Image 1: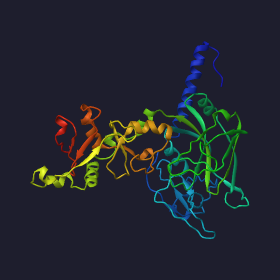
Image 2: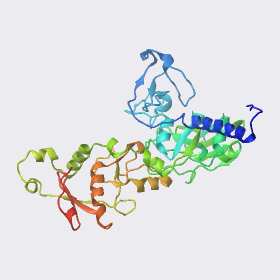
Image 3: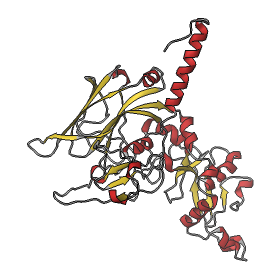
Image 4: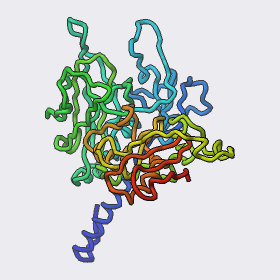
Length: 405
């Protein structure tokens, strides 16, 4: 790049800085994703215009002659070969087994959901499937090895000079029952440009349980200008894929901002209906159609503790995972703060695994907790009737029964 001779050094430096910032901004805003829609398996002849298809499969082939499946993320919509990404738990030799899931996400979209504290900016190495190299005499563990090269552009190198950006190597089990998490193979050995990189906190031979999580390996210190080489070896007979991505670190507040506002999440009437079902009573509409007094219609109630199961303090912002049908909730901010380290997007009440995209503000309990701000912090228990009316175990107005609004 050349610069005009006239003008002082400060103006030239300022112009160059502005151009670099614009370039960085354009790069950092080019690759944004999240997750939602409907997948399908099809054959090549079912497409009206095959040239419009985006096939990005970890096998590296763009062939359209095999059955393929589309990613659920409507901003991704990449197609992949069914045989490459739908792996049966116990394959039988010579028998085709393709139990296609109702919803399917590609590896990159699963990765984005697995750890929202990292925002993907670029993919110097797209997902690549492992290859088997040898089987030991005992026939139990099969050695898998992969060697790939990748390069970083000028803008990517500029970003990596900033503290909030990193280069991350990641690995994922293709048929993981916990869909949104990273996982490295057993006895993994990762090297970048010949430099060994530690990528797991567990024993090399230990399997990752349903409640476990592996992290991506930060390889920023290992990269160099020009061609970079990554090699990965593991003794594991399961199907994995590996990749390298440029990521930006998100703050707790940025992750909290990704959760839908209360008005954009669950409808209050739906939340109230769920509460009524959990307690076993009728809906507010059904009670309104009855001429009897409220106390006569519903005399029973159940105690509900609004103490956060994670912190022990009273819930301030009531959150829950939308697919959960139970009545309990937890403090949204406390949950996000704890997940900054654990990366475990798991309901603390029922222990089901989800992702950030399933996390919402509970409109019913958030309304209740907002009414309880005048109570002392020690008041954490309320009583809820089957029609959704509630009262706090406290003195004053909150001791009276409150009808659902």
